[in-house]
Length: 381
Image 1 (cartoon, one colour):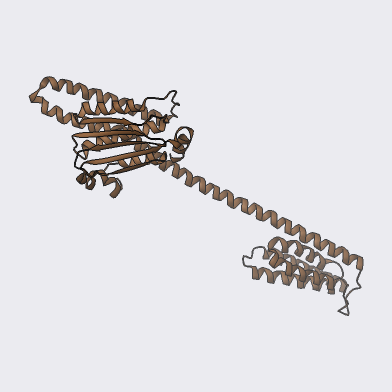
Image 2: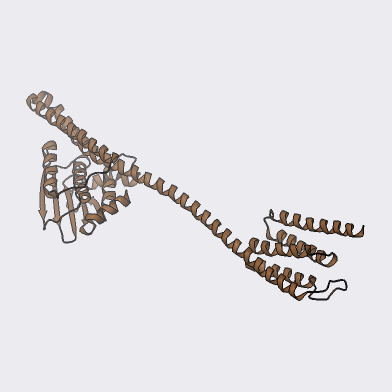
């Protein structure tokens, strides 16, 4: 009867200690967890001293694994030392209590070796767990970075599309507006010239439609690589001559230096920039004459457009509206020009000239030509 009561009490203490270990898993703060583990150590001491069997040692075994899995070394080592001392004291190695069982050196050595192995196992499990946690955190950071990268890429793509549409339509619509005004004056004065002017307007509209379709095609698929090297100066002269014929503004084109091979992105940037510069010379500066200079240097190419328009007044009004009102005025040409130049490692300077009129200068380095230029444009886009 007495033995059954002792077994019942032993079972209650052991089950209670196991339940406390399970409950301690849900504690978030370290101090309550430490208190629970110290209580389990105390219950293990009672089981080893007051009852027959190794139920207290089993609790110590579980604690060795749990401590090193749950806590870092600064916490787990002191608690493990306490647990080992309790195991040694209650296993019969130290005769400090009169009712302590006789010790067994072989069993004690086995318990210590098993304790060391269990501590190592708990620590390795903790290391693996922390590694998995870090991997999940890194994966979550990568997901967030991918989302931010997608948003940034979408923003750059919207900016590129807006810039391309502006470069295609702004020049054509500005020239078409000039011709419409001229056509109104020819209705009564010279009907024969009116017909020719209307034909020019129709041609300009067809060219604008073709150019718009080309831009839409570029947005839908990757543009093919350019097989040969176009004559950049000839293309710029053609743009200048066409603008002169359609607007009546006198354009003078000059070229200096030895021509170099330029990349397709540089050629496109220079051509679109010249169109924008000429359009601004008429629309913002009301110029009558425009001087275009293409300067080839050893390490760069410079395109400069100077007009005899309003100059300082133009700088104070429309042409810098995009700089001060975040594009609210609708003028994005200079901003797009600077974005294209920056993507190729170049720069744009614009301002009133000292002798009157307005000057815009575009510089592009030759170091960014070829493959390096294409790669940087892709990154910018």
